[in-house]
Length: 282
Ligand SMILES: [Zn+2]
Image 1 (tube, rainbow, N blue to C red):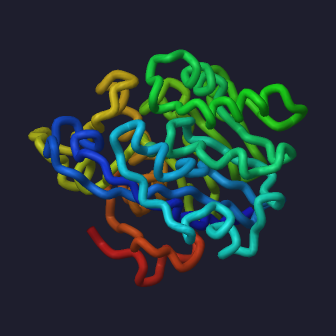
Image 2: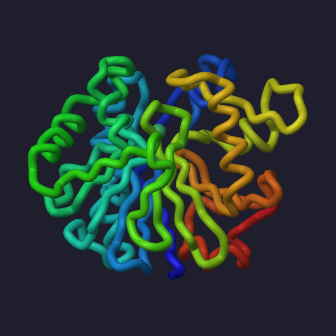
């Protein structure tokens, strides 16, 4: 089955650059995307990540949200003829403030899929402000509602399928419970990798402040070990043709290297876009 991935644009965030790349350009503000993904071509529409609740909530992290009317999840889905109630599953790469903010827009019979470890982390207090109260409270509501939540145990199972051609694997980076979403596009495997990679250019293509050959640069995130983070990035580069993080444009990968990038506005599904001019070489 050839599945299509469409990009949903939930609005940008302004944050400090060193948050993205460890120790890089401290004090300098950078503007990044916040994407979600709509997977079509399977038995039901599936959404991966839902963006941040509203602009005000980003201030709790000292960041600025730039979410406008066109970025509303309803508007983004409507561009593809999809309504909230049509979506069978909402999958979460993880539950940080900018990834699970709109789950309460979906009806309770849309099942939200989370790696169980991630929900545990969200209530552990360890990264407290990054898991805001209204988002997590809604997920607890789902926990007590029939079929509203589905847990994965990816550390133990290794991979779990949603339907043929779509499955989840543990990310082993960014947060303890992060998961990658793998999509068979019929033209190679695509991996929606959440925040395991923030920025292709600074971390992988130009590897800022890095002297070793083909050594990925790490993010400013500190939930796990830096060795683990590098390994998780290398694993992505070795195993997938397309990498789709949430805060940067998708990349085309060959032999562990970034060889193409997709323009900001994506006109069609990833599988159909590969050979046209929207991919530009690095
Ligand atoms: Zn994020």
